[in-house]
Image (tube, rainbow, N blue to C red):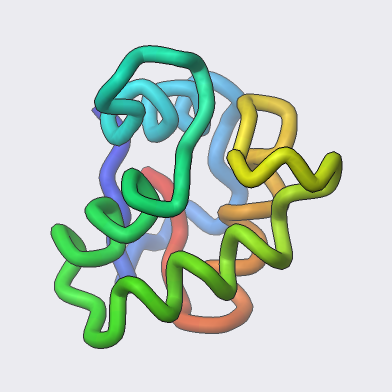
Length: 90
């Protein structure tokens, strides 16, 4: 199962790893991540200000503007988190 890991050496996660990440934190099973689910993912990884960071990540990665990160948008979310905070999916 995928986790957020700031020191991961896997800088380019495979599609299956992104899907695992989505499934792990998608608490309501709708196939996408809400702000609350992103906040929980960041909080569980030990990030301070997880609510603010979740808002920032959602704003950046939500390409269609629906307020959620879908499976298609996960790559952009992971890239943003890697660039901003050094996180990758592994």
